[in-house]
Length: 251
Ligand SMILES: NC(=O)c1ccc[n+]([C@@H]2O[C@H](COP(=O)([O-])OP(=O)(O)OC[C@H]3O[C@@H](n4cnc5c(N)ncnc54)[C@H](O)[C@@H]3O)[C@@H](O)[C@H]2O)c1
Image (cartoon, rainbow, N blue to C red; front, side, top):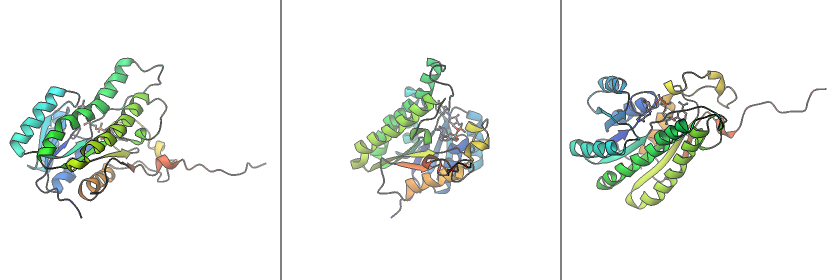
């Protein structure tokens, strides 16, 4: 039992580049009408030029309540009610708790957590008018465990995980499923400044590719018809532990 995305209206936030752009490509490939949103307008325009007329680009800062209201109204008028929402936009910020400034903390929470809440807040009424739908919120392995120097990011991604469960509880009887995806290190502009070595102690000792996250997204949207409120991890096994040799000390 799988769900067809043919003709379904899908909104992807942070869809201009990185994983979001790959999600847009796959959704178009599955026959959806895709609204790729972002604040990177040049990247967004280039993406829709590449994928063709089943995708349109709209500027949307996910922290902007009024802009969300306008976006949903315009999308619904032009294309019909929204059946898929991928809350993918995010930023990463670094700094120990005693060093990070309150501004950086707040900005991280605003984009990564409030942005997800605003997305669901505005899209859910449209999804109800569509007769149901599917929401996927992009969290992180940082929504499953702690990471030193990533306090704001970790807090935002744990928040996304909890919000996903609450939304699933509220929306299940309205035929709306809500799940979270938890990627490990994935090769996108977000981690371009970091060394690939960060993946070496994982069971699969390499950085992942955006396509590997998109595959899980498409499974959740098309095939996971009895799954809601859950975490789906795509991390090369990173959160199960580190591959470090343990044995008796040599004397
Ligand atoms: N790359 C990784 O290793 C990794 C790991 C785990 C989770 N994630 C998460 O995956 C998601 C996608 O990240 P990515 O790796 O593709 O990075 P990316 O930086 O390539 O993409 C993030 C996109 O979000 C957009 N964005 C940022 N702030 C925004 C705002 N206020 N409004 C609208 N759009 C905004 C950016 O412009 C960008 O296009 C993020 O939520 C990120 O936290 C990434």
